[in-house]
Length: 299
Image (tube, rainbow, N blue to C red):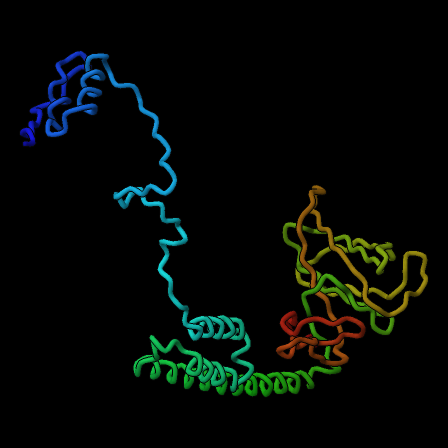
């Protein structure tokens, strides 16, 4: 007959405390195991025990120590190939979305491909189908709108080029740091005297060589300063584009800022090469400037 089960009311506070509970918790199995536990309690604290290797072929009943390998724990199932095909179609759709606006049939092809390769376990419902068709209609409208906008932009660019035609042969005032020499003459418009009373004009060619330098006294109103196209030695320079600078100073010789503008005769109008038609530019001899640089029409 098996003995009674005795549960200790509390764990012993120290290893030297009586260990009767250790020998009585399995009193129903007297013998070698009970004697071993009694000897262990008398010897003092129990030393860490090394786990013995399990003999070959012996299996424990506990599931936590099962000998089943991790690969055997995975459930064996067959992957639906349609799912992988749908993922590939989605990846292809994402890669082609950048060029959707340029090809109207691309979106329709992607939609039909998605329907053909959808996961049979998760077929597209009615709501999703309606959303797809709504997106299809939205893309169609955007493509049509872009086409119409491109036509309007083209008409506007053509009209602006036509509007610039009356300026040909006229003299315009522009803001530029370059000076066109046309027919041996170039003109700068200097401001009225303010903080600066004297301005020193310096003109250089394309290589940076100074070809002309002259000091001009500023008056009570703006004045035009003309360059005759000759260098300091009196040698005529070829028509073309030159750079200039204006340095002002006051009566005490202190440097002051002076802003000058350029006068030139319009000889043509052109549009810069660009994907969207480019910007409208006016041609002054060999100098091309943006139409926005025009400040006024000179007399």
